[in-house]
Amino acid sequence: MANENPEYGYPSPGPQEISAGDVMKKLYFMSDDAWENCRTNGNFDYVVIGSSFCALAFTQQMLKKNPKAKILILERGQYFLPEHFQNLPPAYSFALCSTSETFHWKITEATHEGEYIKWQHGVNNFFGGRSLFWSGWCPEPTREEMVEWPEGVINAVHEYFPAAKQLLKVTPVNKISNEGSQSIFGQLQDVLVEKLQSCLSMDSITRVEHAPLAVQANNCRYYITFILY
Image (cartoon, rainbow, N blue to C red):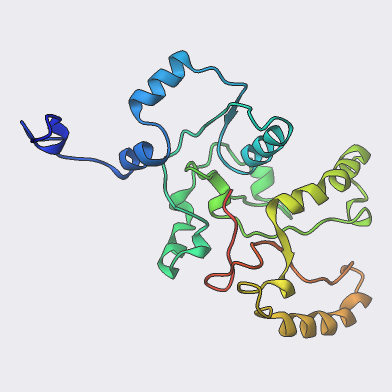
């Protein structure tokens, strides 16, 4: 018997156009009907605005305290990439450009013409936000390197940085491997770090270490798997 739902073409033609966003909403997020019901009748313990790093950290901590917590995450942007762009074929590298960013602020002339900070990245208004595009670098500053920072900030950094590294799966670059095999560039990285140790005599260099990257060390595709949050 033919399906009576016109969505399938009987007894009349179904929708003629559908966007990628419409498909993703129905498959993985909320359809318009589900969202309307959620908006009017939903009962949540927490509502999180945005879907990038802060959303991950907050949600992870709340679910650790209460696995049954009901958390609604709101994201105004559309679904753009399925994971970090560096996990995708090389053509996706073009996604990391100014056309994927918006700039919600005005840079003052003093900043633009300053000696140090002249420009900064904009905002990526997509599901996942900046976590789709970031470099993955996670160097932990030492107390000596933060000498002019407020003491409260310094203490907070050293209190929470270990948990942040665990959450982001920060791994020294010489330990990155493929499915538990020998590290990909381990020997090369070890030699480079050893040679760079001779540069510590320069006043502007405080330390030499293997680059700490937020990557999944034992699930390496395209050499490095960057984590999307």
